[in-house]
Image (cartoon, rainbow, N blue to C red; front, side, top):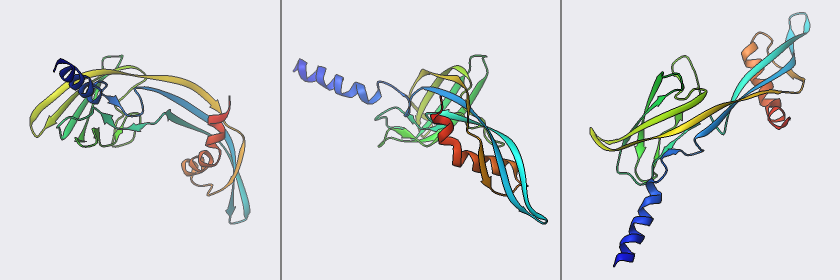
Length: 183
């Protein structure tokens, strides 16, 4: 009977032993940088523009899900306390069947959304709720490091010269993997 109890405890622990992000709690930001010649059709013939493009890439990903195992909850609230003491909060649905939240922007910074994490050590306090009732809470650490600059190969693309941002996006779509594979 004692063995059954111990086994039951050991089997239950892994489902909730390590709350955190599915792809890992340690992330790295790399800055990709490269020069591209953009050839485009202009009124008087072909026009060529040269741009230096920069893009930050998060590894393993700037978007992830929070996992906590088999917890009967429907919402998770994540509060990240950054190394400098500032805080950012994200709230997401939580699926008790999969043990995962919805997608959370960890490092994506946009006009309408701030990233949860910052460079350095981030202490993440999580609260899992069902309705308005607290189910469980805890914390874990997520570290974001600066991976430096990766130089991308010189590229030539055909695009619209009037759209610098779009042209750089196209450049990184075509040459980004070569940047990531460079030493």
